[in-house]
Length: 113
Ligand code: AMP
Image (tube, rainbow, N blue to C red; front, side, top):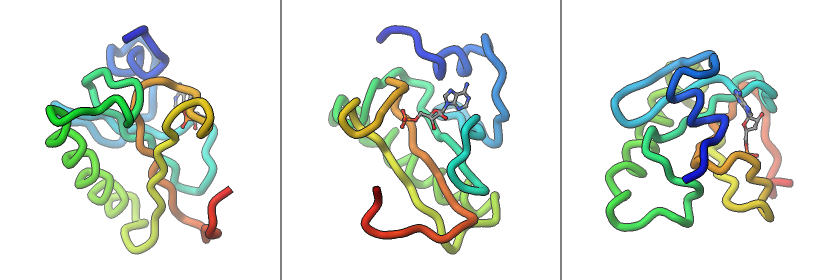
């Protein structure tokens, strides 16, 4: 997978405001937050987008979902938050390293834009 801004964060080549990390994933604040709390949760394993995941990624994807809930709780938004995964350019994905947006601290409309 080509290098991305997120792989540079994983490698420590560029700084990020990291709020959580373990052996499988890193979470850091989005530089252009769309809500009072806007965290990006990414796997260390290079996976360009969710649709590229396969059966061998099942445990990793489950880990990310569980950690998203833990991080939301740690950030004080455990009762109301939104998870977003933009998959592909047509869905507004701009960084091609899988990431979960964890958003909270304001009301959210439905359907999403
Ligand atoms: P997406 O459009 O789903 O691919 O989301 C990419 C997100 O990465 C956007 O919300 C950007 O604001 C965010 N972003 C880009 N560069 C950085 C960076 N260096 N540190 C933190 N967030 C970033």
